[in-house]
Image (cartoon, rainbow, N blue to C red):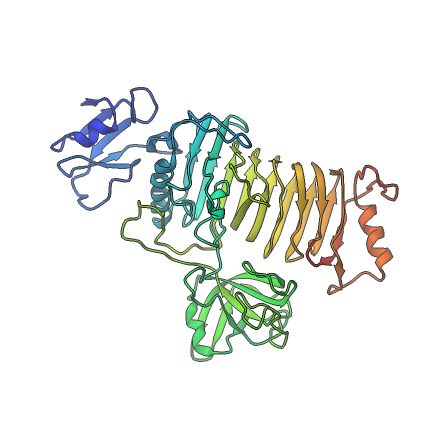
Length: 480
């Protein structure tokens, strides 16, 4: 039977076996499809994209495979307006975000990945009307647009909530996550971390100083180990000089031993001081183990704020391709937060980038529109053919390995622990204050000599030399 739109499907009665729907709102808007009655389902909610319920309570399932088209949730790319004029018109796609996030999390709970297609157009949405943790809880996600500059995601929120002013990213309160990992306990006041005994390189486990705290983890959970405070007084996320991510393979709450999937990579000392005292929000310094998940459940998972019912694990893989995430009305100082396991952007334009609490982040053929500040607790950051139109400054050396391959940076500064540069160009290049590392150069002159030798092109600096080979530069720094 043929129906005009989704409203007609919801208004139908009885249990017709199959409906052909011409559009979500109007025929031909690409939001329709084939819907089949599933008699065995009497409990699933109407999610606004995949399952719809008619007035008789019959549930109709959309028939689809491959990529999920966001228009199937009612998304409309009719938006206009941009920063800094901030005069926006068009459909508010916040409800379509809420529907999509529920459908994708449901797929993740079932152990499946989720591929999303967003067609050409500007898709405006107001983060005051949608749960801005809508990408959390999705372990394997691929988002494909129609091209950088062709598919545009525009946050139109202009209120005073700093989280909602970010382009797409934050999850809740201080959980600045775009893709899927956070430190447990914010903002519910629960412990963020637990003290552990000192470790040695090559250890296969860590031991909680209070044995019962080992029950915070179970086999298969992610765990973060940190030590040595680089920036006293900092808040979330903390700024450890040493960090490493692992998966838990076993827990003994009697002895406090948590067994890890790989060997410990650093010396973490329980005798190092906690500098963020006397009232530490996020104490850091002593050797600690952190929980890296925060399950949330609400009565209505489609209501604001969007929520998820599975742990946000650190082995998430999110890939974004061929789209523009536009600058919001009140752009965050350091662009878009990026958190998770393995996060990749291909051929995208982003309003700056601020990786934080992540294992690997790759920016490949990416244009950064505003200031970027890679933040803290990042293991690998790969910048390939990145064009940064504003500053790109590392917040601290709590970022381990950075590779810069090609591209152009208006301003590049700070200093991760290890930096490999291969033929980029810089309008300006500067370093933060250097600190002694595990294997420091023999002299400050050697440090700066190595740095300038391995910079490809450094306009305006007479002491720069052409790069003849790609080599790592090792440095540790404080805040830039």
